[in-house]
Image (cartoon, rainbow, N blue to C red; front, side, top):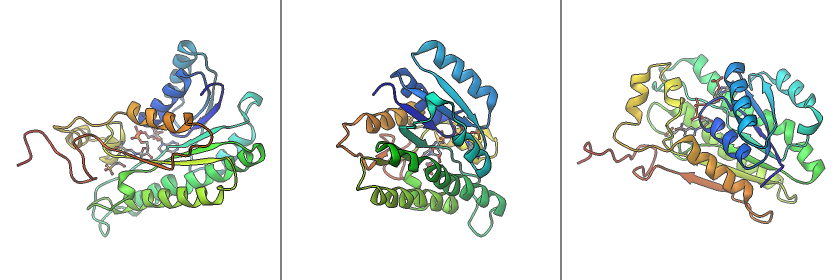
Length: 257
Ligand code: NDP
Ligand code: 8X3
């Protein structure tokens, strides 16, 4: 696909950043959202220098509904017709037991992973319906399939992303607009560093003795879904590292019996 307008939330790092690279390298124009202006400006410069693309930065916290509404309503003309929305911004905080964790962290996960994703959908999909074309790619997780200890709230948010994706697909099935849910397993990004509140050692432990996925692997899947012929809707893709069989079943070289 070429010359499409792609909106990516959480594009300053990891999977979102990799999606920006992939879709830009294929000749699309991008609206990149995130909170870190310096990282996003540097990504914009790099991509505009390397590829035939043009990038608009939409710097806001996705939990700030007023800022999100203002950003969407004031997009410059070339960026107004969004073809693909990649709802990617998200996070996990902590690995505490459900009854012991920090309520503020729970609220942050719910507000970011569920409410903000829903708000971006609510803001952008009506325009897709008017134009009779569009594609929403939600970044869910294998964590949304089955909860694991210490992850109940994060897992619940990703189960909600699955329900929101399924419901949206049903609400749109009379239109040409497609809805794709990507459910990655272990992807080495800043995800675990954020989850462990900046503790890089604990984060590295998550990816020990296994070759994890990269943001690029997930970006390739997002692009595959977006690039499929118009009559093909990739509804879901679960993408795991080869030595991973479920969120908790991970074969680690030298550790397993
Ligand atoms: P990263 O931490 O590398 O990237 C997360 C991105 O989301 C960053 O750009 C971050 O920006 C942004 N973000 C977080 N909160 C907000 C906010 N309130 N407003 C705007 N942007 C925000 O992790 P990943 O790339 O791995 O995560 C991307 C998505 O993939 C998440 O939804 C995650 O749940 C999901 N996922 C990740 C997996 C993994 O193993 N890594 C597996 C399955 C799914 P900032 O730096 O400003 O916080
Ligand atoms: C992130 C994948 O398994 O760490 O969504 O929850 S997992």
